Length: 257
Length: 311
Ligand SMILES: Nc1ncnc2c1ncn2[C@@H]1O[C@H](COP(=O)(O)OP(=O)(O)OP(=O)(O)O)[C@@H](O)[C@H]1O
Ligand SMILES: [Mg+2]
Image 1: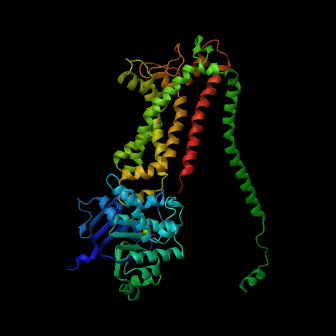
Image 2 (image 1 turned 135 degrees about the vertical axis):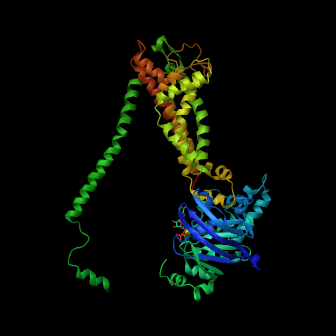
């Protein structure tokens, strides 16, 4: 465990139950800092569940029990002194369906800043944050004159980019994405992938995808899950070219999905 | 190639209406007509009721009827004292039940987890809604007239209003919960995932997007409170009050009983002598008119708020 520091997320024997149903079984993972890690596996294997463990939103349902340990940046997030609010500020999440808030583009981007600031932020700071965040996701030129438009009226691709931009002013360590492209068309998908590429290095990204090609194109490491267990975790090329497990081989060849 | 092959090989004509299809089609029309008739039939009683009371009541309605106090046991004068009494009771009861109901619903819908306490609360809400109004009245007598004792053991407007507040509370809770639940969960998740507290989520996103539904639910309770007779008769409404003045401040909300439209309607229709035949209908028309006015305002308001929100 000498190079622990380069791991951003580590789990130890992580198990999770929805009431009696065990959705995650003894998951042990080391996710590297600054890289894009993709999470693949058939429907219902627990990808979303695992992702939602990392910012502890699963606990919103009263009937969820979790055992094991999740260390993020070497801090066990189940420690009693961990504040969910600070945790979620540091770990952003992007959803399958773009979910901009029903307020203006501008307010969407500064929403995080507003709710985390004590006694208000200066208008100039907010303006700057909006420009930086929208530039970073490539929306600034398109939207700089429409900042007061309702965000829910944008095109889906723009909405999804906005959902990513919404996280950036909070300077998150990790961005979790749950099938971020599945509601988008080919161009939208490409745009989001390019965006992920440009954010690489600064943020650790974990992306759930059903699209094998996407996992291959965009991720550095890849995790294959089946029935709540991690079957294989290695560098993406390795996993796709020389899978160690027979199940992985079958899945990436498309024998089941 | 393939397609020409297929179309020539099938000797049977395609896509035509067979006898069996026609039969199904007929059944479809009959079913549809039947259901439509049933749907239309609910409009009939409404129109009949409205038409009947308005036709019978209209001759008695005049400016004096609306603005003068009743005289000679209801046989002469107007119904001003009853209009004001109804407004007092409705306003006070909603002023109490709306905030409590809305806040309780916010708790139940936004904060409460699945545990025995919240299950008990939900059960109480459902069952409270099913208690007959006369029973609420009896409870009001015990709780507000005698126990809380606002007016030396006598009926009072406050007691009546509180009784009605208890009665409307579960309905307001239910309608508010429904309005809150209509706000997509994805909005809440978006908030939580940038670290917003529940309260920030509620205040910034959930309430602004459900306020029209919440208000509609509350305002619809106006009609219910305005029409109730039994519970207010027991707790704060008098059949008769001789009043000299005719302004808005006829009653003291705690020390007085008041007249009310529903009670006055019952009284002139069954107890009083020499009342012109049109008067009960006129009172009913005013009561329905007031309620429709409030509902129309609510609908207008809702349409306005709807037009501003989009998702
Ligand atoms: N809130 C919940 N309550 C109960 N069971 C759940 C809940 N969420 C997920 N599950 C169950 O847990 C298992 C894993 O679900 P999860 O959503 O993590 O799968 P997934 O890999 O993300 O699937 P998909 O690819 O379809 O998104 C499934 O069998 C699902 O039925
Ligand atoms: Mg999923």
